[in-house]
Image 1 (cartoon, rainbow, N blue to C red):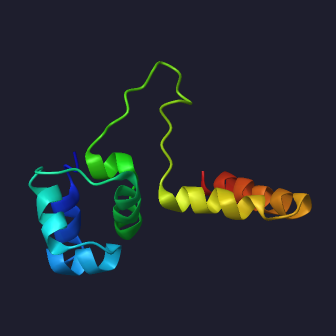
Image 2 (cartoon, one colour):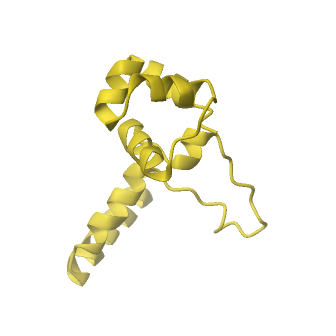
Length: 110
């Protein structure tokens, strides 16, 4: 199930033991996940995804199939989600200011 766990772990330079310590499990569990001997529960999947700053879809190797509606095929990165969350914390006038800055920047870039 967790098809990309080993590659994410190696790319981050972590041993199985180090990853286990970070997410609160055992090295044996990480080994079983990587060798497809067992599947992690949803809470462990969340901790793994958070550790690698990826979606659970990315972690398990799932690529959503577009349904024909371009809006449904939109997948946001963690950074984009944080930008949206931060934008929602702004007042209306602050959001308008940021929008104008972005529009001017893109207009001048073209």
